[in-house]
Length: 113
Image 1: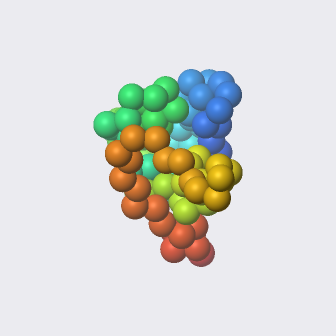
Image 2 (image 1 turned 135 degrees about the horizontal axis):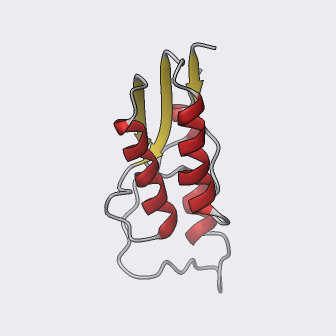
């Protein structure tokens, strides 16, 4: 195997185990890989939620490894924004809390083919 595209993730449960501990173990075992591609998320260094902190920790692990790599950060996908804010209408109106700005991307524009 020459290239790994790492897409395993766990945004809701056991994020530290999956995103950091498990990822660190994978990197330890993948020293022979010629290139490692790590999909990530725009803004993880500014979002104070655990999942994003753990994604950032994983990026740092990869950067500190000897494996040649590419970290590809995308904005959130359209369907995630829909599920997060627009999943249910109330009185034929959507309620979006606060002054939230989103710039999402279509999953097909980010997919690695």
